[in-house]
Length: 194
Ligand SMILES: [Zn+2]
Image (cartoon, rainbow, N blue to C red; front, side, top):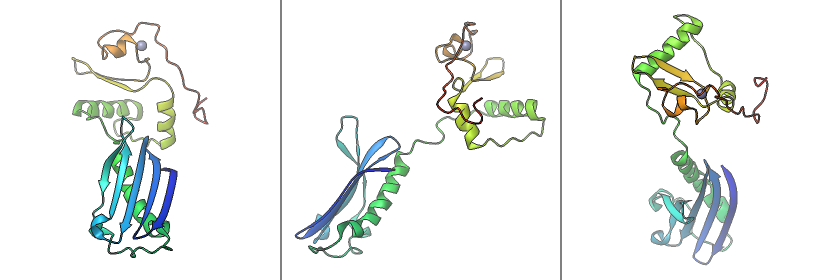
């Protein structure tokens, strides 16, 4: 969460607080206005949509925060009063906008094939913990992981082919073109990268 802009002010019968942040590739704005009257008060979180206008993402009912906030005064510190609520709403927004950690349903056959892969490398009772830096390194080097379930029951796991390789574009039903290569990203060359 990176803060881009933050404003707070107290004017007449209200005070307000606005913060704009970046989260998970989205530009998000929280706007909280504490009016003398409950019905004029609001706490919104909005996100910039594809046509660069703000779209409502979250709307916190005033019953959850209005009573707990002091009535407007000219000398009130609007940021101090409203920032904690803004923090809470932005955490909720970030959770909503975060990319899902699992987007792919894995078939039982693919899981069985992972078990077989583990067994062929580490034995039938094999166990292997994969650390985060190993995952980072693996996704930054070689081709993207492809999983092909073949008609005969076999499963191929590969990182060996570039995206436009015939083997990949035919989901594994055609042979590689024999010139398959992939560009090895160098940006993450670290201790594991040699
Ligand atoms: Zn290939």
